[in-house]
Amino acid sequence: MNSGKPIPVHNLSYQDFQLTTLENGCAENFNDIHRHNFYEILWFLKTQRYSSLEVDFEKYDIVDNQICILSPGQVFNMKLKGEKGYVFAISKEIFQEVCDVEMVLINGVKPFHLPYKVKSTCESLVALMEKEYHDECRMNLLTSYLKAFCIVITGELMSQESISGDKQRVQDLTKLIEEHYLLEKETSFYAEKLNISSHHLNDIVRLGRGTTVKKMIAQRLVLEARRELSFGTCTVKEIAFKLGFNDASYFSRFFKKHMGKSPESFKSEK
Image 1 (tube, rainbow, N blue to C red):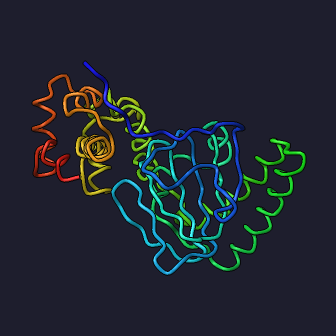
Image 2: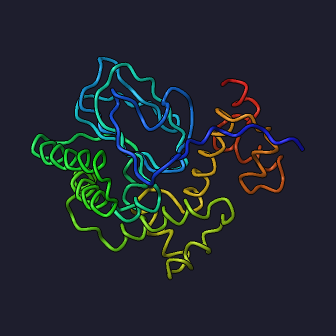
């Protein structure tokens, strides 16, 4: 079987952390559909009238002083039109050290706004990062500044209320699904990982998200299928196997159940 061409993956070519500006050259070329194997924080200081970006089939209009956090694996595209701001390309290892990964996975896609008082703090931290990055580039100091920056911006992203036990379990479940959905599609696997019964886990998810664990897994599989069908060149059969389906016809029925059309029809429309 000939392997189809996958969605391009942009890698960090050097260093575990790159800091640049939108106007003076980016850590990557934005002007194509691609994925990252790293985390990326975009801070839009100045935008144009119709500035926007697309992440996983969703188009977001962006305005001045917004931030977007991109996670590895997300399909991303943006046409630069003179926006000004910062780009932080961060390896998985460093990001796990400086930021709350689980919270970002749940809340981090949609661009969010920074209040003026927070913007001022962030500008000071970025100024320190820029100076160190272009001078001695000591990673221990850079990661300290970056951690402070992430603490400030994620404070605006998440609720200031303390996370309840059930909400924490939903966050943990989301992370587990992201890690295991290709191989593990049964609720019992995730319930065991979280040390609770399948029935209890479904109750938590139903109350917190209005859905079930099986549906969350299915939604993640459908999202990945849509990515591959829209932007990759693999056949439907190849995509089915990549997503852990042993039977391509079963994958087609699964996809049609959730999208209302066959994978072939969906792909032909793109």
